[in-house]
Length: 140
Length: 140
Image 1 (cartoon, one colour):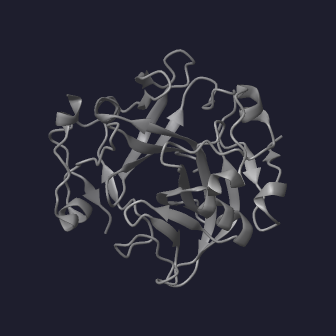
Image 2: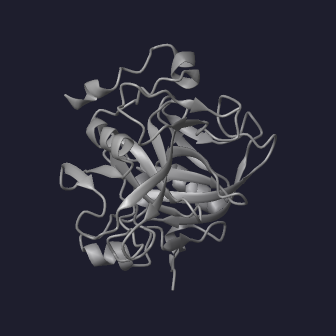
């Protein structure tokens, strides 16, 4: 099991939150959430998942590797599209179940499979009524 | 079930990805991932989860409500700490299983339960060797 790449999270909460060991808290499916932002603009590009092996590859190669839940396979982002993501910085959150990578995107600079730069191309109106009535606002 | 607040995601992929209806793709636990950034600095503050009811409350009140997985309860961020998050903008991703909110934080401006502004206060060195050797770098 590639999970053995990383030690088990310590049962001591302070060690987990304040320690200097990367001990990802993988969920029942062996995944952590990964948030990917553009290193230059700070824009949120996508939210995906990593298992231990994709996390290892990302750390060791400096390029983003994810775990595709739909295809149940390792996913080297950009392998077919050319939209390789070079990791400028990686961070981990307090309880180590989320990873943040800041990336530079190669190829045509896209990220979303719909062809857009970011997966978050629709806004949800907030504070204007009930959920039943709302309509998303799509970017131009 | 509060999931009925929202319609089921359409089986047609184009409708899900290009449509103007908010039809969140809740996971088996009834949750979507929520990425929360600072509306002014763009900094990533936290990654959390929302169920249908917390999503509804966030949309209708304009303040961030989450679902606490550890406490299994609705969680109005800031209720006890004063760190209320006012939502400046909400976005949803292509397959509608992730929400992005840009917020302004009240109270002392903190977000993480450790007292910090962001949960992502440790960097993971990338491209410098194997996972076994790495040591996290904690912000000052």
